[in-house]
Image (cartoon, rainbow, N blue to C red):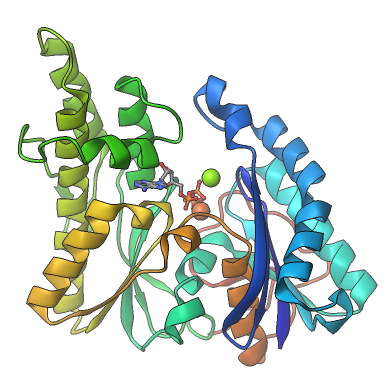
Length: 341
Ligand code: ATP
Ligand code: MG
Ligand code: FE
């Protein structure tokens, strides 16, 4: 099927077209610059930016894909989690396009989208696999048997901050621009990852905690005399995050007898995390899959990818009264649909 995907959960307006697991074309607009001076995403600004960008991105994606809107077989739209005002813009657009094209609408969980991004380019996910989601608002280890046909099992979550949130907060206290992940990644290349021994917190068997790490960085900077060696702090912080994420993900694979690890979400664009995951998976005999960096951060193609899987699985469309669920927990890839068991 040809599926149109729409993403508007945060500050990226994404539109993508996927046919049978293949990304045909996509387009992305970001309001990140408009939020920069506030140090974080402002919901009203994000919603207005989505409203302005949606139709232009739709046109650009359709033309990049070389298809016509009338060829579309289904529409998939992020229904949560995310900012309510931002989600509502994409949801209204998704309903309008689905209704006017006379095709079914599928509400999609944003984090299932992050996982499905890896299907584009790498093919179907093996069953079972462990998925490490590391994004701006979430950090979870999942046991996935079938992304759209089976409930998704959480085997570990963060007890406090998400990994991306830690990057953003540490960047802020180092005076680096928002979003912090890419900025820390860049400056860390000039630093020594072993310069400072920051803590690696573990919670339970496979859980994470990053707020203590953020506080440790703040303390270290506060107590340091003289100019802060920003590159060394950034590299040491990044090393602590990459270390704990990869160690726990590999341990989760081992404990569950799983031979494939899939790393997704915005932080999966991080070079050091990618390298360390590759090294540790190689040593453990685990196959590692990570989407290309541009599909790690928010985009419309990943939402279309979930829609494509749902249609292929014969899932019922979501209910017409599908509404945004800003705090949706990831148990099923589809939102507002009949629960698949
Ligand atoms: P969620 O998906 O949890 O709802 P989100 O959609 O805002 O949150 P993503 O778009 O998946 O998050 O990822 C954005 C996060 O990824 C930000 O915290 C950003 O700092 C981080 N990030 C992006 N690129 C990199 C990078 N190269 N290194 C580290 N972190 C990165
Ligand atoms: Mg973003
Ligand atoms: Fe995201």
